[in-house]
Length: 368
Ligand code: ATP
Image (cartoon, rainbow, N blue to C red; front, top):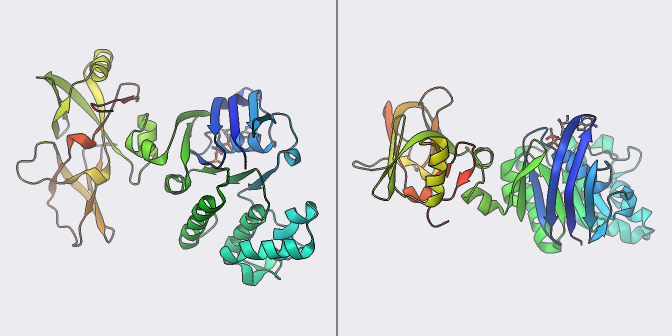
């Protein structure tokens, strides 16, 4: 296995900058997810690692060696792309074993390795079939197996689970997680599915408009999102973001928004600086799982008419309507179907809130 490094890498297609000055270090044995919305530059970044695109500027290193202009076959990488491109005239066993055949491995050895991986992916019983004789999900797992049989330095995945149904997708995700722990493979995995990135990654690079906006462990990104963009992208449902006005009183902040009041957040220099430039207005963030139905006398609350109450089994998603684009959703964990009034008051703790300045950048709160 090997490390991967991007040094100030940019890629333009004519005048359009798809990837803009990206620097990224991926340690040996790390599983890094490139996460972001459609068109943010994830696939282009992966294709540059693979050698399928050449950077307009910057350098790419694999295992400490510069590979920026090296042919894909000389990079010792394995790839799984969305379109699984299996060889139609070969059965699954030969498809999976093909990368080992190219390396000159004897037939018995390569088929045994293919079978081993196929069994884990639950397609071992299909080895004699042609790709046209199996389902789309099975084709995708064959493509995954073909990459995994190959002892590469780095594994590159571009949304490899996107064609699987929900149950198989969860199973394959668990398998990849297990494999990563077992093999300690270096992997770069492109996805727009935040749950997949949270579950698999040792670190996530969140991308927006060709740039990396945060590169950190899943838990760090969940606990301390660097911007409102990240806060809104990671989490399901996403973090609630509310415009608030701030007043200062006795070392504490008093926050007020439509139907919302909050106190108990200690004033810090960082908050003072943000207030000085944004004229009292900040964005308050609270995750749905940190809101509860308020008990009488609760101090940090938001009150608004009920918009929806969705029973999800172990929890209910309770959404309040505070006007256009200003809904607030709470994940209320309860065994019973929740009966709520037409107007609902939710409460939250000061230790669970996030603050963002006028540009959407995180303001560290006390203790961070
Ligand atoms: P998705 O999740 O939809 O696959 P992505 O984040 O992987 O999106 P990229 O495929 O990297 O995005 O594309 C980034 C931007 O570069 C997009 O606006 C895309 O239209 C553009 N782009 C990609 N390849 C080319 C190309 N060969 N020529 C011109 N523009 C391109």
